[in-house]
Length: 158
Image 1: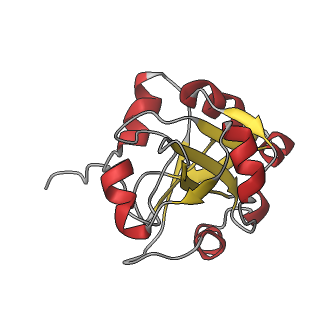
Image 2 (image 1 turned 30 degrees about the horizontal axis):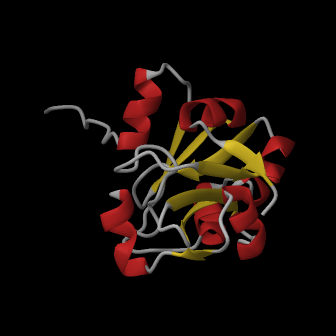
């Protein structure tokens, strides 16, 4: 019998290609659950668990914001970080079309297009953080500096 082959996501393929080490945490889940529940399912530290949100600026440009799962994005601060007059969350129905990912499985790595990525400044409090692996049921644990390098991300307060 063939050995089960690990299902690689775009995020994992990008990290593999760039030889960036990461740990994969799998969990059972059939539908969207929030990041706090995801952290509990995987045993990841909630304060080190980050969610990925996609916002759109007044200019119609998309931006990716990565912030702790327990925090809410501050839209005015996010707009300032992105150099926009204002930003708003994209509608849930648009997530797949814009990112290539589904709600609850959105990773800052491997979206359809490379959008500007902003990490909440609290990410620097940790050597490694947990992010979505690019599908529901998959979490990645990797170094913040590696994430910043591979995404071209910036640290901001939002």
